[in-house]
Structures are given as structure tokens and as C-alpha cells.
Length: 537
Image (tube, rainbow, N blue to C red):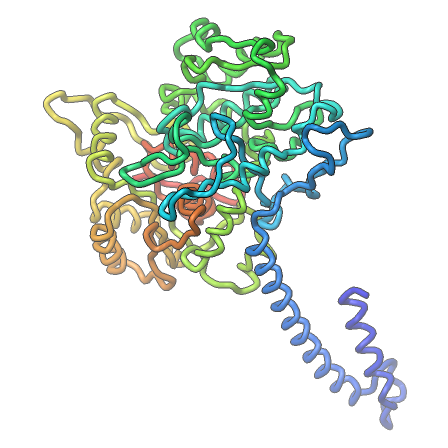
């Protein structure tokens, strides 16, 4: 019995217990006295229902956090190497890529290491995590089966961009190029071959970043979910993405068509837009009958820095936004776990209007939240800003949408100066300049600030103090240093920051940053956010 029927039956039973009072016999239904009792009982019933909802919500949240690492799709009962009888029974969660909810962001997985050795446990307690379960899950994706029906199995054609993300890519650059590569594979009706997010492609499992031990290869599914890492592809003629490991097993070296990207790139105009580049590559890829196509490791990237830092990328956005590459994009359960563990820093309350597990999707705006992206990491940041000035670099491509309120035109370069004041204010703002910008975009109802930054703690404490003098942040000011992570979660912290920034009601970012550019791309894709609420220093 559903809730409405249950409440109706309870009310009817109460009404039947009362006889009409004198003078009330002409009234249909319960008498006046019965109605009073009925009103009180209804109030008690409503309170009971409210209490039940609270219990159910608590149970849902507990279940989510306890099971965040379960696979997001129902895997085939057969192993990847077995031959199922009839069609595959592998299915994905209902409506997984239409307004996905946190409960639907169950993780995809990971791949083997470069030498095809399963990453084992850490040799020493101080070693970073190896993400073994993600590697296992990616390896067991249901589409890793040659017996599956069209468009997967033996019918699938693949595109492996071997030159992508070879070494020392920041997450912002890696993600932007990955999305464009995946869209190209989608447009060419080929399965995208994904790989781990790589600090070092070869060598030991543990590398070093800024002097700290870091996983050399982190499974992509520890960062994201969706079609890029093998999730449901809603287009019936497009095969699902596969791991690099599976591609190597399905495509022996003798069957691969490997060519240098310059074969096509050199024929394009130097100012070709990304849409034009994609169209040219799609024509080339569709003319190749071989299912196994890869761009050589030594090839230049298809969508390199000279493209993503220019407006040439913007003409692809309408098609990209409608494609499953963006409409199906989601964050991993590991990222979402970090979000809920640190929820108090991002949202105003746990009331029913804000309850994340009952009402939200991964794009639901976080009302009242202002997010600031500030790069202030010492010499490295200063050098990046100087390079932007000396090379007359404009804002990143996705930071240059015409509908965004803040613009930047590179000043004329004076070789006698390492950086102009104009560029510095946009790239490396001082604390007074940050406060001034916040005042310019703030509103009375904005009551919380989250600062994504690599700045040192003393600088941030000074910034917090300055911000408190100009506005009553009723729900506080938090920074990246305030977040708590699991051992696995701390190495995907950039993805968590990106998730928060893309949902913030208002955002101020660094126009020269690929990280900010990815955030802006996701915000522009979200119809619940206004372009006028996205700003730059």
C-alpha cells in the first residue's frame, strides 16, 4: 500500500468511530467533533511520515557511503573472455546518463600497468594507494567481450590516441584534451580507448610530484564516470569505450593501422577551428576499414595547447554539449564520496530542500556558494603568468565564450618588463584585488566561500581575514586545506574541486588556467547556471 492510500485508510477508520452529534446529522462524513480529532490525527500522521523520511534519508546516505565503490553497471555473468550464449545480458542502470544522481555514479574501473602486472598492495605503509579495485573493474567492463552484438564485440572499431597524456600533464590539461579526443572517436563511430591518468607511463608504480610520493598511474575511473570510461553510450551505432588493455588484446600489433597525426594536421589551415579539425579527421577515420586505428606515440597531439588556448575550440561546443560525451559525463563515486564527506564546506544545510541524496543531480547548483580559483603557488605560478604575458597569450578557449562578462586582451609586450600589471592582475591577483573582485560579483544571499588554491596557509589566513571585513559570510570561508580525504581520495582532489566549482552559484577563476577552463565548459553546459555568474580575475 502506498503512502497516500495508507493515510486515507487511517483517516477513514478514525471517522467511523464517531457518531454524529445533535444538529450535525445533516453533514456528510465525519461530525464536527470527529473532524477536530481527525485534524489532530492527521498532524500526528504527518509528523510520523516526516520522521520516517528522515530515517529513510539517513539510511540512503549510509548505504551510499558504504557502497560507493560498487560497479555502476550490471556486469555480464560471463567472464570477459568467455562466449555467452545469445545476446549479452549486460545492462546499465535505468536512465544512467539522463540527469544522473549520486547513487547512479557507481564507479567504472581501471586497467593493468604498462608491463601488464596487476598492481599489488603498497610495499611500504608510506606508499600511495594503487587503486587495485578500479583496475579490476575496468578490466572487467562488460563490453570487453568479442561475442557481444553490434555495435560492440567483434563489430566495434577503435580509436587509440597513444600520444595523449604521456607524462606530467596536470588534470586540467589532461581532461580537456581527453574530452576532445573522445568526441572525435564518437563522431567517427569508433570506441574510444581510454587509459589511466598518467604521471609516468613507464617505470615503477610510485612516482614523485613536487617531492611527494604519488601514484604513477591512476585509473581514469577513479576520477570520472560515464561514456568516456566505458559507461552507457546512448547512440545505438556507437560502441562503448574500452580500456587500453582490452584494445591491445583485441587488436594485435599486426592488425593496427598506426599513423602520424601530421598526415592530416599538415593539410589543415593554421587557423582551422576544432570543428573543422574534427570534420577532417572523421572523414579520414571513416574511410579506414580496419577496426584498429591508433595515433602513434610520437605524434603531436590533435588538440594541443595552441588550440585549447584559443577561441578556435568554441565552435565545437554546441555539438559537444549535446553529445553523450558531455551530457553523460559524471564524477566517480570516489570523488562524490569526498564531496559528501566535506559537504559542510560547500552547502548551507541538510534540510530537505538541500538534501543531496533525495533531490540533486551532479549538476544541481549549490545555492549561496561562491567558489574562487586562485593560483598562488610561488615561482611556478609566477613563471606561468610571465609566459602568458611574453607570449601574448589570451584566456583559454572555453574561458572566452562571448556570453561571459569578463574579457582580456593581451597587452603589447615590452621586452624590458617580465610582466605587465594588466596581466598580473588577471593571473596573479593580490589579496586586495581578490577582495575587490569578490565585492563586484557578490550578492547579499551569498553566504559561503570556498577557495580552491595551491597557496600557502599564511597567505590564505590573510585572505580569509580580509574577506571577513567586507561581508558577513554566515556559513564560513573554507579552502582546499580544510578538506579531509581518504588515502585514495586525496589523489583525485582536483576532480573534487572541479565538481564543486562547476556547481557553485557563483565562480571566479583564472582565465589562463586549463582547470578553470574545464570548470567553465561544464558550467556553460549546465542550463541551471547563468553565464553572468561565471567570472575571471
